[in-house]
Image 1 (cartoon, helix red, strand yellow):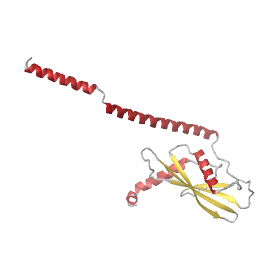
Image 2 (cartoon, one colour):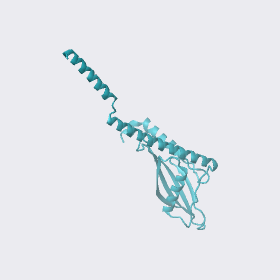
Image 3 (cartoon, one colour):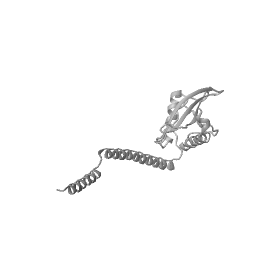
Image 4 (tube, one colour):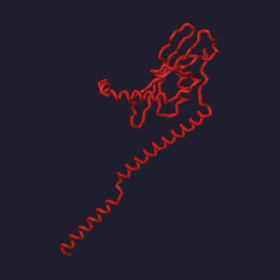
Length: 201
């Protein structure tokens, strides 16, 4: 075999090997693709579950738009039971799992004919893009325990949003998660507009 033929056949073999190596799947790429598909499936399933839950809650709201719980009586009241009932009420009104809240007892005010127990509910919403929420919002719940009403009478309950003055009563209006979204969005827009101030903090 001549040197020219040998060189030509070597080039042909190199090209064949190159073509084969390009068509053979890369194990690392295959693993990465599988991980990506698994993550995509997990996110899609979570999204579908949220949409289904939202649709079910929406249909329930159409039939019974104002939700409420059976609040405890004056004789049953304790600070801890008050906190648990606030959580129970909110869990019935919130559709999206991404909203998380913490309820803390703030203070007791001694009024002339009653005691006013004040709780603060701290809200934030984490997302895949911002796992630690940049802004949060709050709601004040006030439970009124009368000094004169009988022990089997239900306590008075009302709530007001952070930086708001409109008073809401469970059973007359249902708590809306949209209120929290509006407040957190407004705070975020304010922080963005005055970023030079917040960056120094």
